[in-house]
Image (cartoon, rainbow, N blue to C red; front, side):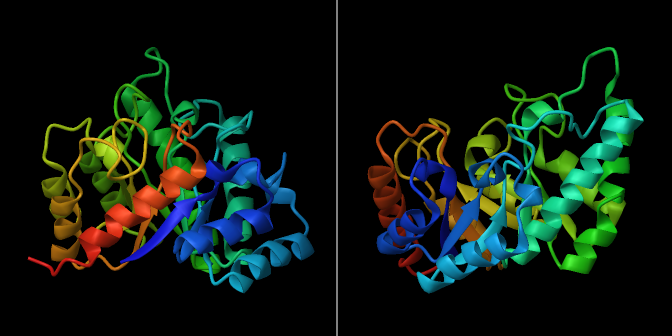
Amino acid sequence: MKLAICNELFEPLDWETTCQRVAGFGYRGIEVAPFTLGPDPAATAQGRRQQWRRIAEDHGLEIVGLHWLLAKTSGYHVTSPHERTRRDTVDYLRRLIELTADLGGAVMVLGSPQQRTFPAEQGHESARQCALEVLQGLVDELARCRVVLALEPLGPAETNFWNTAAEVRAVVDQLASPWVRLHLDVKAMASENLAMAEIIRQSAGSLAHFHANDPNRLGPGMGLVDHRPIVQALRDIGYRGWLSIEVFDFSPGYDVIARESIRYLRRILETPAG
């Protein structure tokens, strides 16, 4: 398993300084929130994309992919009952797929709780059908660009749609595409009734990407969650992807969060399996 960190933690540093700091802490990958790239990241010129990629590679980093896909946007929504909104959402996400590939990334995490929450009067079944239509509209572009869309279950405090790993696995099974899979996040898993290690084991055939953090919104090892059984479960299912650190409380500072998180996870990863 390889260690990465999400770049929004390092705002307002510029891209080159961010990559320098991330590499300096010992991470091998950097995961990108599109809103950090500008007001319309999907419209970024090809030359600029290649520059971002080259800078990351010059610092020994791999751009893992994108997350927070629809954050700080307007007019896009995954479960919208309005056909035009769904169509616009598909178009925007297709352009983000191309951006991900141009950056050298291989995964896009679809979380964005505000852009998938549906009103009570719409009903869950309608929201489910609308989301499936959006996802089906992305499969061909995902395959063309060789990018995986990883759907993220989030707790009911954040959204009323895709709240459990089991719900997302059902969507993945229904679509039956190798390009649409599951993403798991420690903070989000804490809202489920199952133990996190059990959720991971049940998700063995679907898991594509993983965020390490704590329900207190800080990094791994900075709260009460013991990541040792989590890492063991990932080992047990043969997961060889990224452990990407995503935090939501930046108050300790990027240097403290980045340093403490990687130290904690390295201690666990350096312990023999079993």
